[in-house]
Length: 246
Image (cartoon, rainbow, N blue to C red; front, side, top):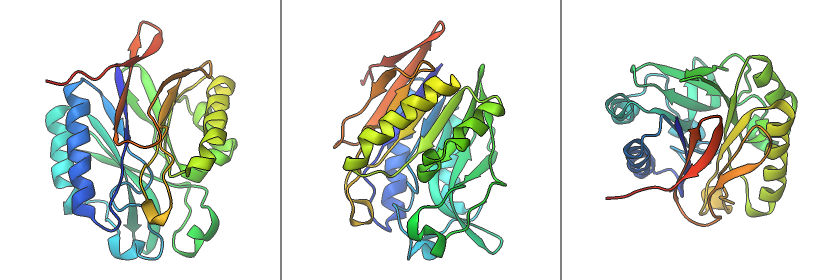
């Protein structure tokens, strides 16, 4: 089994351009036999608060059609972040696009700072998906600051905790320590995806990474470049996999 974390440099309010990056990185991950690719928080819109309602997706949004088709054609699960409008509520969410053409939605449970002025928090959209022998649960950004969040994932049988975040460079040391701690404490593998560039006029800290269930860092990206990192399960162990391009 192979997992992929995507590290992107989104363009503000430019969903078309950001979707193009999603297509390219998803195809690269699929070419290298990944079964799932995880993108950062609000990866389709870039991180936006004040304009999120104008950029919002609906659960069956036609702008997802090509990404859904890519998921089905390449047989890869795609987890892409977006502001999602459900009924009268706006959420910071993630679309989980599956090769059988179904969609699940995860919504951020713990909002941060002024996010509550624009978004609704919800615990009602919290799927766990199966991939091979693994069970994957999800988190978005500030969710990881609350230890009860990974604890709840573990209680539901999760073996992989996948977080799409937007953390700045000065926050990354703490983020790595926190996620490594969760991996060791709850005996879950942890996969994290973060931005680089200037989302929302702030700096993305990159350093997307994977920790095994002993809390050991098994794969990571740098703090400045777009790309993907692959992690492969070999026997009972996870190892970083070099991307082979043709």
